[in-house]
Length: 110
Length: 121
Image 1 (cartoon, rainbow over the protein chains, first blue to last red):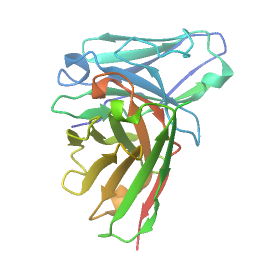
Image 2: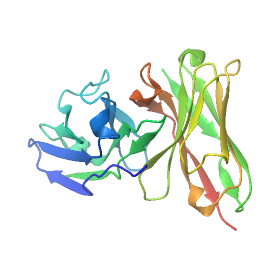
Image 3: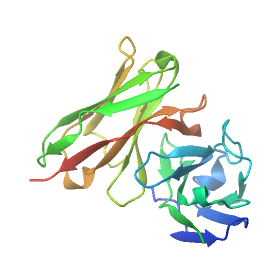
Image 4: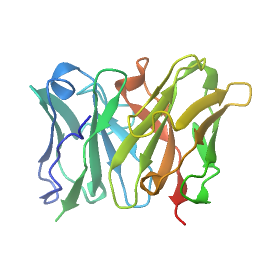
């Protein structure tokens, strides 16, 4: 199972919005509603930010939103803040009892 | 507060074995599926394995299938990962994580701090 494709980097100024894409195939992202997004600060464990494409766990700011169109999922961070600077990973159910992750996107707040 | 604490990491020679443990607290351990996810140094996340709440169902990523075994002891609130025939490419931080929703592939949270496994001669 190939990894999902994410841009290596993204950036935005404080207060702006930035969108990170996650491209898979009809066998993973396009075929299921089980796309998740994780935030990872340097040296820390990942944290779930979005699950089932667009749902936010309790405690995650509503500045974070998720969506999907065809084989591509997206994470949008609105009203960028300095603390949003981190690595972001998408994941998807890939069928056959397998989960696949994206390569990660480093988000820089300018 | 949910806490997951991994232990058992370290340096092992290629072909060797290692067992990771994950002590869970702050939730009803026996009610949740649990998973291992790893991250090679400077690389992205890779799903390793998952086990159902009762231990009856286990699934593995292709890169570890046949070499790693996931298990759990609900009486001890502990998750395990037995790693055999280790290779250099297994070098990574191994995270223990709780399945977030009913379906095990719906997301993982929270995560432990991780245990570093280094495979080298």
